[in-house]
Image (cartoon, rainbow, N blue to C red; front, side, top):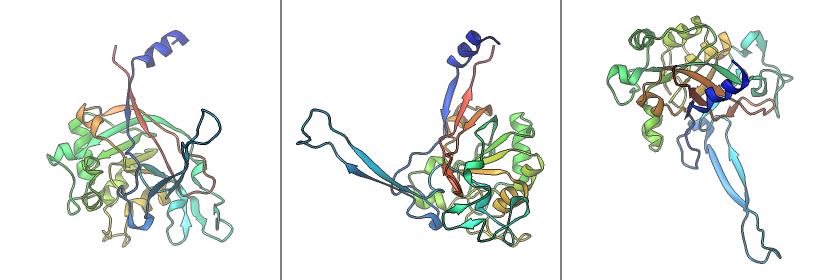
Amino acid sequence: MDKEHFFDFFSHARVYDLEQPRYAGAPIHPAHAPGFVYALHRRHEEGSGEARTSASGFIYAAEHSGTHIDALCHQAEDLYLYGGKKVTSQLQTATGFTELGVETISPLLSRGVLLDVARYRGVDWIEADQPVTRQDLEAVCTHQKVTLHPGDVLLVRTGNGARWNDPVGYLASGGVRADASQWLADQHVKAVGADHMAWDTIGAVDPDLHVSLPGHLILLVRHGIYIIENLFLEDLAKDQIFEFLFVCLPLKMKGATGSPIRPIAIVVPQG
């Protein structure tokens, strides 16, 4: 494809914004409270001595607030990170991690697949006592006529993204069960994401692994697969867009365990 046709190709593309809005009081995992705070530092005021005035502010936010991606240093198993890296005082420092920090995540530019589990189940959202299973994912793949490939970014719609303005309800919803996380790891996807606070159901302990957040252990620690949380997937689901170009650019915050992101899905017309 020559340059002219390349730009014409993308000029007709539709872009879906997959980020939830950030504001004080938005849903946040208790471990990461208060989440997001913005305060004006400089204001537009009279008496500056010229016609031009300025305003600017401070942002205070947890890495894992709002729509964000987890770095591989975020979780450990028996104090070992992905790749068998032992957590030591040299690796885990007061100013961040010296390896596997979020700055090591390359820009994600991959085939994206949306599995609309909520629609398939016929529910508004997934409840905490009915988490997303491997059987759900396989069934939705068949129903939507999509096949996962190595390197894909797999997004799961629980329906919970529509409740972003209801923090209590949002936090009480169901996530993805360990068997589903293991199945996705076996497909060799590059990253996974969901319209859910923690990917896994908050507060649930896996009966086999005997840990909370088992998907974090399976995906991040054992397989090096990134997790994206608090996505907005309602527009994609409404238009039944199940395959797209997924683009995500984590911030280069050296040594950080996660990063705010503004992921997008790009869909180009056929023909």
